[in-house]
Image 1 (cartoon, rainbow, N blue to C red):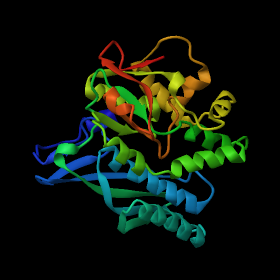
Image 2 (image 1 turned 180 degrees about the horizontal axis):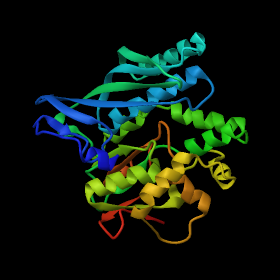
Image 3 (image 1 turned 60 degrees about the vertical axis):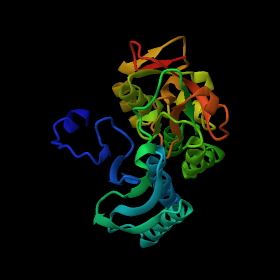
Image 4 (image 1 turned 30 degrees about the vertical axis):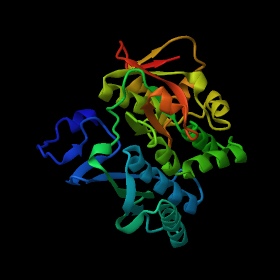
Length: 313
């Protein structure tokens, strides 16, 4: 995708405050000196069996990019691909789950678009607002900052374990609860401090999104694997080989940017690349502000740029 995007023509527009140059979470377009629009889009195939829960997770995942940019979601358009043979009751449940989660976020659904397809896909295009001087981007991390994170890791591995029939019910429930948790409260708390760089961790995994932040900011991010939080069962399932295909793709793409200091268990190393759905916010800020947060925890630090973008302890 990096190679393809490099061929896409672009033109100068002084009102484009964040485009796709640094693989940020959303685009930002200034509409006045006091207001800019934050725009993002995300959709995917079902990752849980219950249609209502799938719709709600899809909404939470789509909303996250706006909070990662320091914005406030205000409206959304749904995106739906639906097989004609599927049960209409399931479609109703998916849409209701998404609508309820959007209501929780105080984000209005204005409509959407649907197509007939052989595979179910659902998500949203979300628009938010942010002051042009208060935009958060993945390019702002500064050496000396603390690297903070807001959720546990492992949704991809737990989902794969469920598909293989080896996941415990309580572990699946914990993973679903994490995916259903909006980043709204964590994002609002984060903004009480001086945030320098921010992204949310989704399909590219922790390492993939950290890599984007490090490259955009011209720094090295040092991640202490002992400080990470993992979802219940995630380490066990990774050890048992419940590895999603996306995890291996993430590792193949990003591992060249990683330096490892010391021995790391293979299952822990694998989870660093695990594709997350509705994952946490990853951000950097001065230590004085980081110590005041209750909904985020430190997982490392920002260093001057070294030989690699990521250093894992």
